[in-house]
Image (cartoon, rainbow, N blue to C red):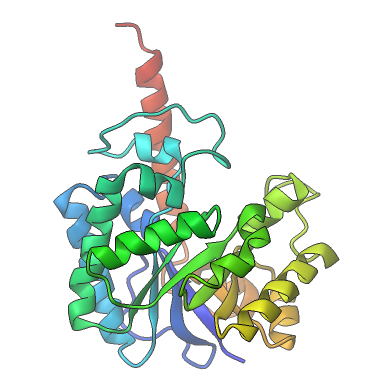
Length: 289
């Protein structure tokens, strides 16, 4: 079976391995923002996101393009030029991130959303989904905001938190068309472990049971599901064997499929830039007046 491709701002001029992938299953908006190091409130960032989506929606005109609203930690957002409110980050895994931040700072949410509305006018294959969702009530609030501001395309959400998993029945009643199971964070919260820990076991029986449960319930409601994250080759093979599609990050194509890519260092370079900006920001805060 074909899987879906995840992009983080990589510039492509033709479809990436169409024998392996169908649809753009995820565009991570935060990496477009972090590459510029400018808040989505800034016009230059909105223009960059809009141009990128226009190009991809045109290239994949006969397939779906799913954009994930930006998923920034507090620390990542603090260092962006144009961020209006500086906050203390108690822990990057928790706190004000994903949909929580979008609803807290509705000006950022609206700025990003207006780009989606504009692109959708010419490209009806653009769809959007929401990260780090608490529960159905929070998701419904976001969907109301999205629809109220003119976006008419399909909407989906991620299941990354145990609270969202336990509220799955209600989430499936919100009108979403797609669920993306975010294995990085969901595994962390289930096992109480960060990604580098030996206890972060994506391929465990426990995670397999959770995926199967979500798949069964979503399929019964006519909602598509895919599994995303920094997945291993074996996990992708196992899930595909069960008829479950995966969203494969562009930089993992060589590791999982043994194919070459044009931009192997793109993601590493952006992460390096963000770390440099964070270190510089921390030094500024410690400097005496």
